[in-house]
Length: 101
Image 1 (cartoon, rainbow, N blue to C red):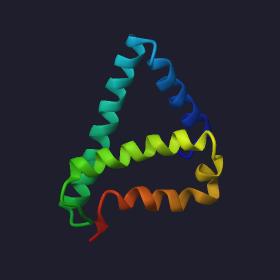
Image 2 (image 1 turned 90 degrees about the vertical axis):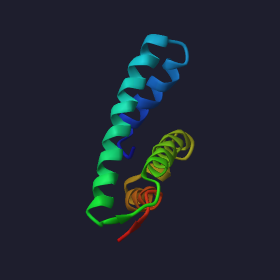
Image 3 (image 1 turned 30 degrees about the vertical axis):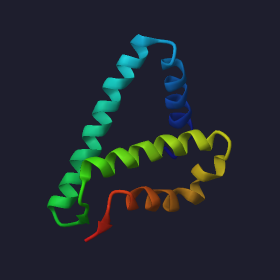
Image 4 (image 1 turned 120 degrees about the vertical axis):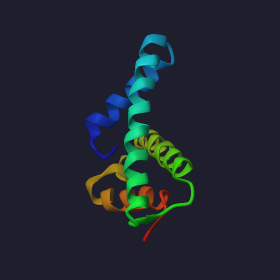
């Protein structure tokens, strides 16, 4: 999200996926892996008592959707993904997952 090259690449893939069903299917598989990764981390943090979250699946969905929105907004407001905004952006995304225990 905060790496310009990766953010631009993934935004381009999403744009191309609108017209290319094979690319869309491939990217959907990648997105499934991303979802599983964040779900695993978040369930582990809740299970370890590090995070309080009532609905992990919903919280992870919201965080991932927010990350995608930030990527789109960064096209027009690049300062939201600038290095000086990194901690603030991460704190905001983490707050969507719950509160530290």
